Length: 248
Image (cartoon, helix red, strand yellow):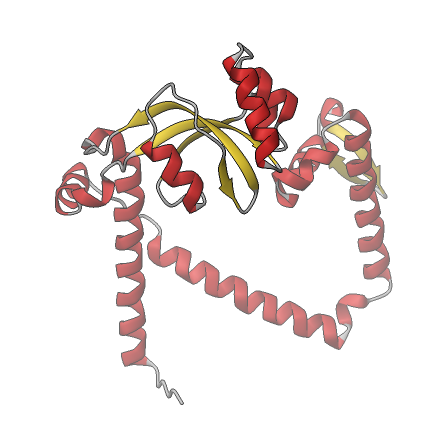
């Protein structure tokens, strides 16, 4: 192994930068965030060293001969073999452009774009405060500055922007107000379970049909999943005829 790739060595066993990357990938992006610094990487390396030390001790202590370990090992092997068998069934399954287009045409309505809006808001805990903010907006204070100054929602850091959303994604009172507004207008205080919102509508998009190219990736994922499911169920039916199955 290249010396540049080596980060530690335990009883002759080399630990590389690749091992560090694998460790971070295995714990997931949220957990890995806390180790994205030089000191964090050192912590990961120390943990990899600790794991190697524990492994060496376990082998020397013959823990691999324990009855409990052998039972866990056997169950792990069974589970891995089941997963491997499923992967063998679906490996190599692919789709053609014709299949994708045919599925899209038959299910086009499922890919239609629903009506959506983009909005920003300022959230406060009482109506009086909301009305005071409205007065400042009328006097010339920008909505974005007002959100940063007064809003209790984390969106205040981006001027209250909530991004694009469709019906069913927000609480009913907020949604009803936002979808009934005109672009560029600011609402009166809207009461919800979270407090009082001042809403600014920044964009409105009518419901529309999607083209095949726009949703091709989604169609591909769906068709591939259906074909894999079909292959899996066909294999199960075959095996039910081969092995005795009793269900109670």
